[in-house]
Amino acid sequence: MNIGRVVKKVVSTVKHRAFDGRPLLLIQPLEASDLAPRGSEVLCIDFIGADIDEIVLIMKEGSSVQQMLGNKEAPADAAVIGIVDTVTLRDTIVFEKYSSGS
Image (tube, rainbow, N blue to C red; front, side, top):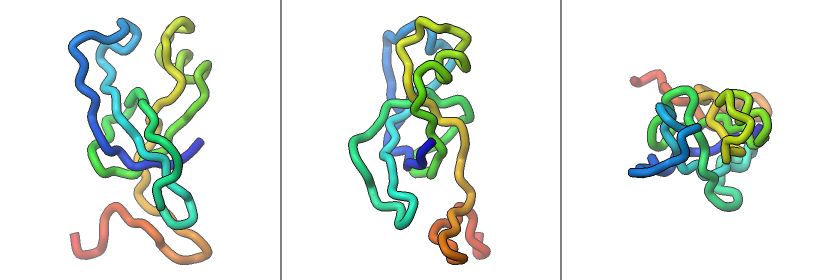
């Protein structure tokens, strides 16, 4: 599992029937140490309702994503499975979704 930032919501007039009722998101993977972008963006099925600019937990295991969809033939290999509230590294908070001022 990796973390990433939601960069775009994907809009499609036609998509595989396995994705019916599931939004597709483009996720930029991040380095856990400093939240810097790492590698290419990943197309993910959203199982939890993430929004643009949120940091999320992504699973990149095709068979597990297919099992979550209930379709072993689904052309899927990545999914958003959690929204990150806080990232703490070496006792230092490097990201917090909700600051004390909100």
